[in-house]
Image (cartoon, rainbow, N blue to C red; front, side, top):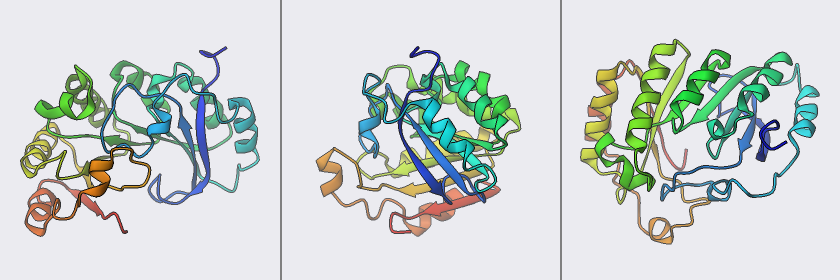
Length: 236
């Protein structure tokens, strides 16, 4: 049963910020194998946690929102971890919703399978590829992220790549290197976003200031590399 029904860690009934230009509901899928220090949803990391709601019940709720919302975003956790993601997307698509996906690209082959169903992707691209494993706590994470980034760029699906910045984890040089790497790959839409302390369980990161991680000079340097660039401040 676990493989046939999406494991839901939580959901948001309404958001105007998780899918650009669309009103959406968000489904948070339970489980993530990476352990990024700044994670603001650490309660979604364990795969064996009890579901917040049965998928069939959430799907019934979404059916009642048809015509009022534009899209449903699958987030997490890491949604591509769940083998039931493709069927869940098909069910939601059948209700007339657009499909959004938030992913860190942890499982490129599973991402490849669902991309034809997706209308927009937000890809969390963590840091320069040679620093990935240290940030995620997972060996081989750089190769997965690189493959996922290429898949998204080549898919033709609208997307944004976004990087969360805390100076203790993501240095200026990491950002300069990463943005050049993804620009060279063909990325055109990129977002830098401040660390947000809400939900983070690493007290050292919460206590230490993240100010100064994104100064005007660095922002200008990054902006020049992309056709579309956005800066998301923590207080924005």
